[in-house]
Picture 1: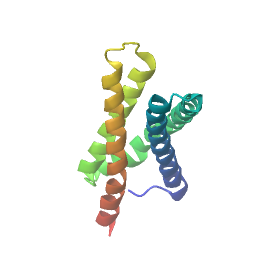
Picture 2 (picture 1 turned 135 degrees about the vertical axis):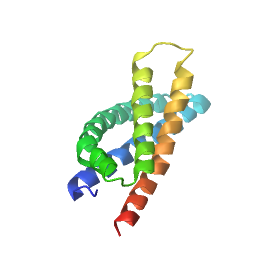
Picture 3 (picture 1 turned 120 degrees about the vertical axis):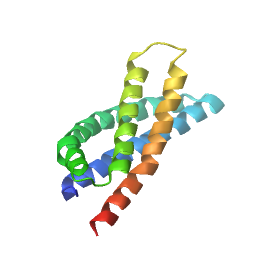
Picture 4 (picture 1 turned 60 degrees about the vertical axis):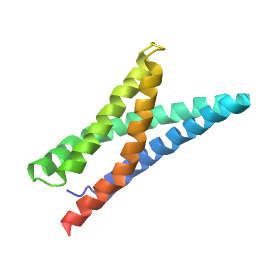
Length: 139
């Protein structure tokens, strides 16, 4: 179930931007706590704006993947386990992003944040594996 090159590259780019801005936010938040410099607060704001914008674009592309990739691969019994894991991590990221943006609970926020971070790193590890296993089965 290979995707056309322009769409595939767009997905790779979107996920790379999400990963890099997420890691950048973690570093900037950590540096803000240590140094207290205003520059880190500004960096956090820009990173979150970029991360959120990339997330919106990625949501559109993931939505497009459902009929053209996920459903076709599921019916052909191709790469089901890693595909289900990918879909699960994406769903967790979408749900926790909603929670981080819209829920005001200071009790839940740290849990939601750490779940989002863990799912993001897990997806970043799973993404190349999913591609590798899918290409290996095509050969």
